[in-house]
Amino acid sequence: MTKSNEPFVWMPFGAGGMVAALVTPALILATGVLLPLGLLDLSYDHIRALAAGWIGKLIILTLVALPAWHAAHRIQATAHDLGWGGGLGLKRVCYGTATFVAAVSLIALLKL
Image (tube, rainbow, N blue to C red; front, side, top):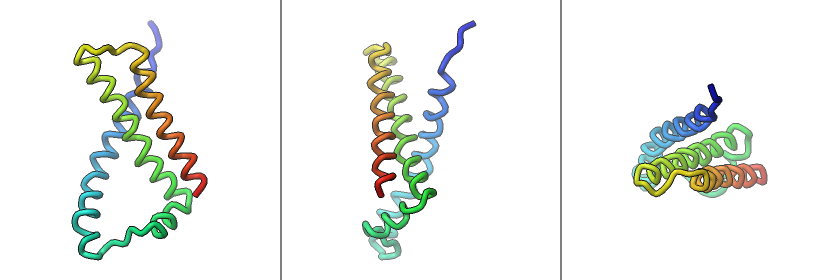
């Protein structure tokens, strides 16, 4: 019996899908209803103040990194289903890009 890293891949995939499913309606509400009515202030200074604490940074990192992993998995799976491959090279590109996005986000948040 061989060990697989499949559970590690499915965990961020599932979490990314959940984050995207929960956050997308909230963003639509905020940008489509609350901002035009003047009930929400999303100025740069306000966002920077929210991201000043470690909880805010963790939330922002989660909102960026998990959907990036979700997208990487979906792109890789779709390419495989379409017969465009599914080899190690495509996986490296997809998951490498997701890891890069997460790392850049983390570095940017730590500099705030």
